[in-house]
Image 1: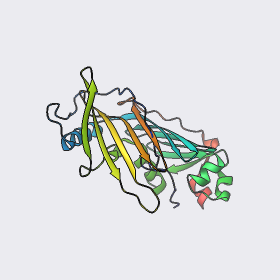
Image 2: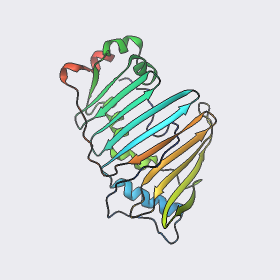
Image 3: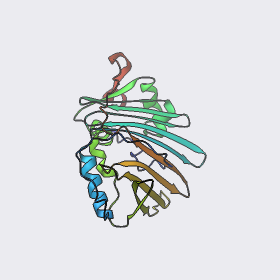
Length: 241
């Protein structure tokens, strides 16, 4: 099985975010409004996220001179993602039975790690991956609601602040991720709602290499995925052998 080299949802896309209005569902835990702490806010967010069935996510980022845009719809059993970075375009969708991957030739090679020969086989078709296979499981893990809790930071090293005007407050969680051999030090600020439910609104990431913004909206949406026709698909085994 090939191991696709792809952007990890919300982790390798460096972003600067704009606010989004969250449509949320009631009856989930919230942080204490009187004396919130980093721990209480994260616990409330984990509880809220574990009960969400869908969300719309937009990531706008820039690394050097290259601007990238990612649009993701995450559902309980289905999801979709469109990545655009220069001439590179990738489309991924997941259903309970199959995952589908398509994109431009340069997107398939530079983002997904296909060889030029493999990309040529795919052409304008969509690669199909059946449920239960490793490639399918990889995409499902990143495009369905189980990924949501994983986006929260660890309690240690995260600083909480509360801001707001006109009686409306939001929580802000800030933390720094140390540099590695492949990535510079990054600073992140995650803004969460403090009204009824504690859910992400936006995240801002900055570093010496660039930065970006992720916005979260349509909490609770029922995600529907467009499935390509059988005539416009190619089986995973025919591409990778």
